[in-house]
Image 1: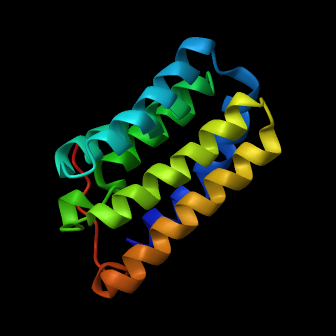
Image 2: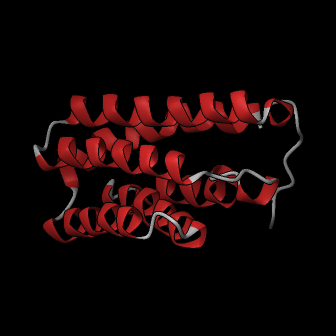
Length: 146
């Protein structure tokens, strides 16, 4: 799982940077609605996981890079932690929604550096949460689904 954290920390800020330069108004609207839905359904863990997936997939799509999209698709099967037992409390779900909102604001301003920094902070917070709440996951092997 440590490898997954490293890959996310490397790839996702770069994808947010590219997305800031390339995303469409429709993709920006999709991201905005995803954050709104995540907040509105804060008590529903399944909605949270779905909107988390939508958010990160939309940013990967917005890069315009099919290679980065494939990397994201490969990581997303385990990157939210649900398949390895990570549970997000309602409080943590709101924190994730707030982090997503910061990324959206940077993307709205079409500021690549701000988008990169907001995403770096977000994935850094996610990794810190996992390490604090689920320390056994860092050394756990990952089963890749083909």
